[in-house]
Length: 155
Image (cartoon, rainbow, N blue to C red; front, side, top):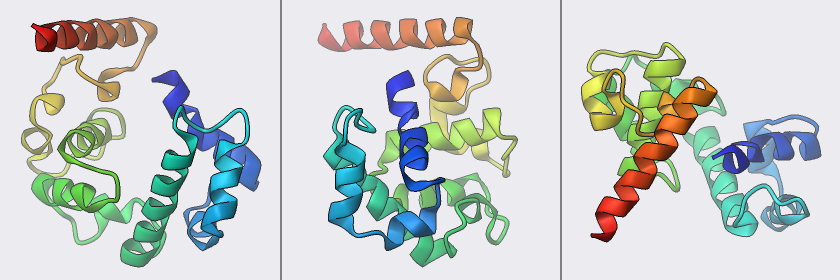
């Protein structure tokens, strides 16, 4: 998790700040090169660079480059925020549920019905995802949950 979440800082360091509009307006091939240059922004640097670029374009096109409009524009409820998250390039159910849970649990973004819309990830006290990591202890608990889930899936 730590490696994946340091990617945006690497982009910011290389682009003199993290700016959605600047990413969207950048040449895709140049952006990919920036992202795969060691140390790459992600384990799959090229693929992730294309996703980030597509995501930035989507946010510019649909939210005028202001990411927080995903959960603020028009005062949406939890279901609507989830729908908007699922529309993001590279976002499926899991990522959208986790992002909504992270917004509610760690950022104070709690539109009506957010916990229900986030499914099990919205449960208070759960230790399922990055949305629940707030300390070294909770990181250990999330890792244990993920390990147990993988072991169950194998059987």
